[in-house]
Image 1 (cartoon, one colour):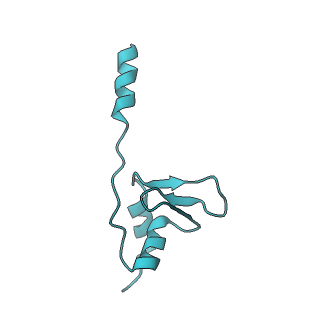
Image 2: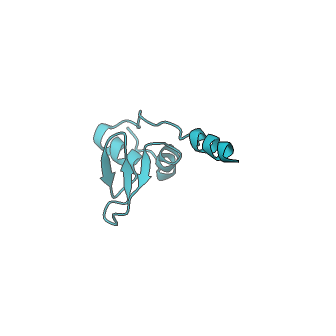
Length: 74
């Protein structure tokens, strides 16, 4: 199987609700769904370990409850 390009992996991870940027310089990226931190983008590590693209990606949604609370205060 041909490895995905970095741009494909970044596009897959960015905008995902499970993707996090950590404060650890040795492991700056993380995935909440899989529960790990890594030196490389999580999607890249998932592909290296499993040979498949990540299947747990979920689009992040704006927090509508926060917007509702802000409107209620007015």
